[in-house]
Amino acid sequence: MLEDQDLDAAKKVFEAQIAEYSKEANPYDSYADLLLEMGNKEEAKKNLKKSVELAEKGTTDLDEQIFNQGNNPVGKRIVVYDAMEDRYDMAFINPTDPLGINVSYIKVKDLGNNKVELMETYVDRKGKDRKVRHEVMKNSNNSIEWVVFQQEDGSDKWGKATVQNYNKSM
Image 1 (cartoon, helix red, strand yellow):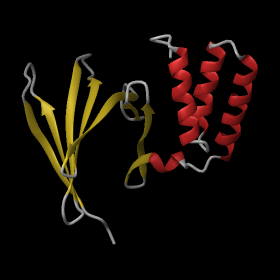
Image 2 (cartoon, rainbow, N blue to C red):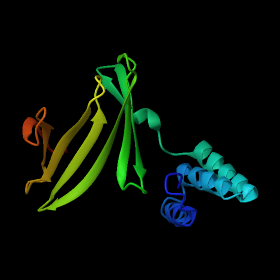
Image 3 (cartoon, rainbow, N blue to C red):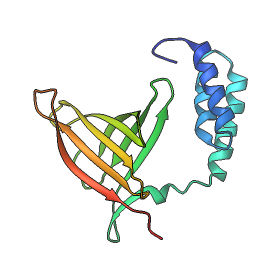
Image 4 (cartoon, rainbow, N blue to C red):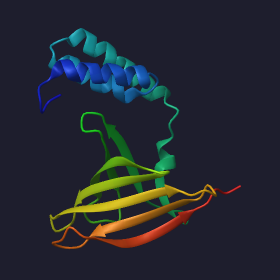
């Protein structure tokens, strides 16, 4: 909306988000921002009011997204879908980290055969752009294999960093 100044396209995207997520506050809030940008203050107020009402009634318990080590909370992950960039913007808030917040962006690509690739981009503590590639595959026994690859410094080569296997608990 702000980068390309294509307000008509942004309006279509926000209206589609409202249709898809009509019980969520965020689409109405975003749509209100657009309406303000378009000079429609009264309609913006209505959508902002709707956003607040939905947020107050919200059924999403954000506390469930807090990561714990034992009984000690260590951080909170917030993930938001960015429809304009077709990616997920993610922030990890960690009170024990001197920087406090780590931000990354994830693009999802279907590789077929029950496998997806998650390409994560972030800036490390030294200010360098970094990428991490995740391959997530559902196996025939309904287990999940999650392989994380890190890009080798100064190279286009990827090295396997970790492999994690997950099974459904019954």
